[in-house]
Amino acid sequence: MGGPGDPPDGTPEGAPGGAEDEYRSVVFDESFVRAARLQEYSAHERMTDHTPAVRRRPPLHRGLSRQALVLVVLIALAFGTAVYMGVRNPYRAPEARPPVEPLRATVVPLVPTGKVPGATGAGYLYAHSPAAHYDVGAEGIPLPAVRRTAHFSESQVVAALTAAKDYIVASSLYPEVLTGGQVNPVRALLDAGQLDQFDQSLGHPAADGRHTPTGWLVRFDPARAELADRAIRVQGSLEAAETDPETLEVSADHTFVYALKPTGSAAKARASLFTVRRELRFRFSQDDLRLHQVQLTASYAEAGPLSCAEDSASRFRPLLAGQTARAGGPPATDPYATGSATALCGTLAAGAQPSV
Image (cartoon, rainbow, N blue to C red; front, side, top):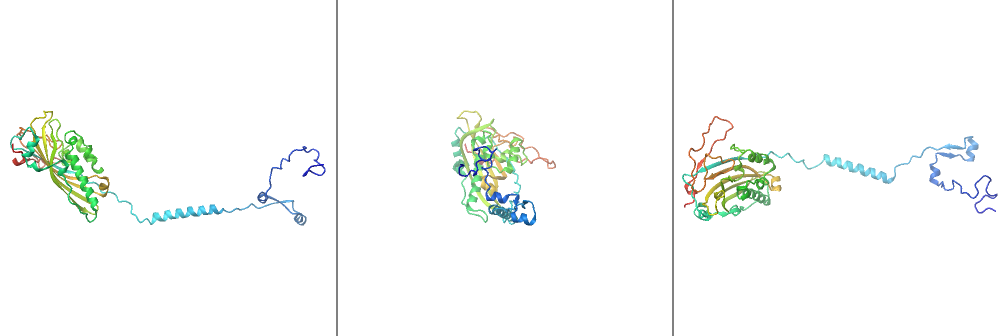
């Protein structure tokens, strides 16, 4: 007898005995049946309509699933919101930054009336000069009392004054700038809009009021003089004011007194004093305040003892102890010539020299 599930009369002839039906693994579930493209007619339909045993079913039209529909709606909402915000954005695009004003510089050499006084000690010279009561170094550049302006906070005014002081210190007191030929401490504090003018001034100096290195910084000819004392005497003032709703301006007026001696001379060589009065004007935009940088727009300097015959635009070539100015005075100036700077020269007052 056959086992359960076997045909009553056993396995038909020709069928592989005991072999699994090759289609037994195929499962025709309900979804498979409903998706079939062919459908068998019922017996009643075949007897009534004389139709073939099967008919072709129309293809199923499946709609989007709920998850896909939600995703499409979310994407549409996000796109619509982005377009709306782009059209109705309440913030204005940043305005183009106005060009930075170039530096205008004037350097006036001061000529001594006789021999330059000298002494073996810088302290003695300072004590017998108008700089006797000056402060030393950056202490001579104090910040003033600060109040907010109409459009700038107190902290912003302090930031402007501090940046101006840092520039003055770097360009007037750093030994590596004064006699070492370094410019990076000064350059690093300038607004990016003035870097080209600064680089041209240092690379191709000219006494044209635009490319005058000694308008940007104080530096001496290292072949002629070096510092006899690093305790430079300073006195002056800073003042901040608002010029328009977008700009702060700082005015600086300081006198610096340096003790110098001939380059390479012995430690006890005779020293002399060299005086530089610098009047500087700085401007600050919001970006300058944020980046701790300055726009140096005007520089006026009086320096001596110097000779008018020497070029003071590139480097100061000071007259040292016992020296006198060369004869001849400044070169003539042709008022009809274009593109040439007017020669300016003054006389160093006797009271500005130490009484030794």
